[in-house]
Length: 172
Image 1 (cartoon, rainbow, N blue to C red):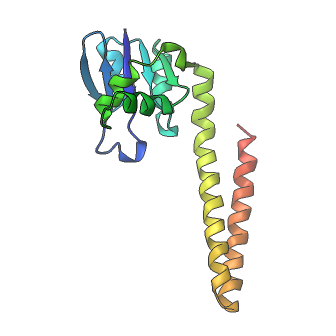
Image 2 (cartoon, rainbow, N blue to C red):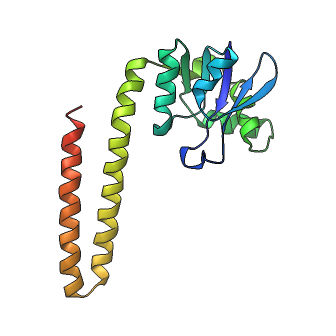
Image 3 (spheres, helix red, strand yellow):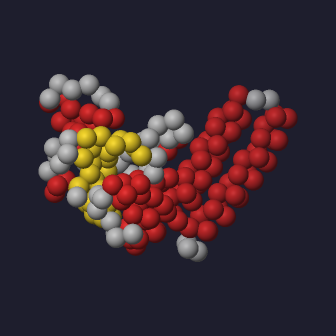
């Protein structure tokens, strides 16, 4: 059985759940964890987008024998919504997802989910460090010489940390 899911953005999941649309029975299901959909008998789970925080959920589904497919071109949902003059909501997005042809989705393999669950958090940390360094460098331009020297030390430490982080990428 197939189900189409509008995945919740991980940061907002404390309040918000994934919204799934069962096209066969024309019903909506809200779940905190994607793997809960297996309890409803769904084996093929089609999702609109991948977030690094849901790879563990996807991996759990795959290990239990389910299949997960993600939408290759996420703009397809918005395009279909606009064409049908529909308002944006999680339920409508899940329902619209069910109207998109299956060949617009790509199956996620266990190997891919395992690799991405290891690599994506490291990439996020790297990007956060990179962003902090850029902010500090911007602040340094506006400060007096005393403050600049202290900030340069902080930037050097962050750059060193970033290099260590990059070194860890290749030691998976």
